[in-house]
Length: 452
Image (cartoon, rainbow, N blue to C red; front, top):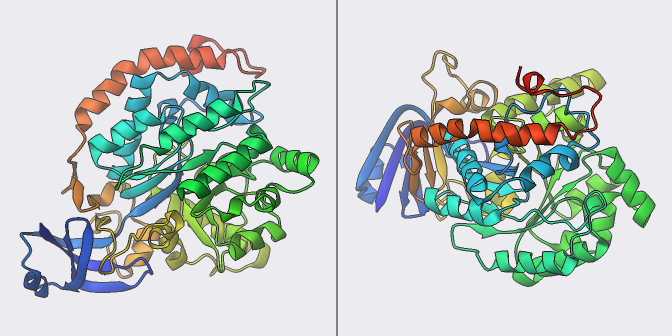
């Protein structure tokens, strides 16, 4: 089936703005971007008129935790200082999930992503990856599924061989629309044996790999003490950087030498502007983004609302603040660069072609710019980066399928899902209470205090 989507503006993944154009696609591939009116030459069976809209490539959420979203609003300033919060709070919660909760969590995450224009995401490491695969198939969404992979955790030492066998089983579930990648939870949570064998699996099966790296100072101290190298120097030394695509989540504490490794080896850095700032500190990207392949991540719903458009505004403000305070330069980290980052530079950060060129994957979005919050509009790129948020996304096309059309989700019953989650709140409160009373925090928790 050939479909044409007409818009007031079309923005390519390079940030080029075209006016009064139509994007024509057939099945899951782009046929052309052409003038409105000339699109009929392709004999489309459906013409979607969007007169006050921007048509652009969809967003890539390059780092997310689909099975942490049920923690939403439970993390306050009391939990943030935990050393570190992921081993004390986030991972223990993940381990409390059963298949049903993991599935609903995945579904809620996917609904949030589709709603705000995400067409592909990288799961950082799901404790129950098959629940995520089920949700992806049902919703026709796409992403890179990974398993939460480690063999060291607070004195526990899961069997390395069994962990590797689980990863191999998961790799058999790759499909045309959805990828299965390999994840390393963190170098402090993985033995060298596990890291090297995961590298070998990724190379053997030609799949991508993602890992949390250099997200806190203790991790840098750990690899210096254990291997005599900083985290990225270590994984480069053992050949992990041969895996492509390779997406490094956070990477806040990289040295100049490590940044050069990222650029020279064409690695992807996923900047999570909100969570990196909340938990880790200022990022170096605004100071050294030339020749850098970087994308934007939500880091999952435990901390954010999954809106990549909102993350762009946080990133822009942070970038300007850092450059203005250090160099009094307000031009650095420009809007076009951030726009390209939101699309993962046309999907290249995840090894896909998600743009608007003929032959590209038909995964794009439509945004309404006729809104009291965003008019008047003179520069569409500036509007996307600085003003428009996810609520303005009207249509989301993933591999030729409308997952959101004229403002409504088409593959998810939004009201039913909302009601299911609300009904689960008492059960979830019990789990969160069990978790919080074990935390090494001076304040004594009570049920009343937890939710007041």
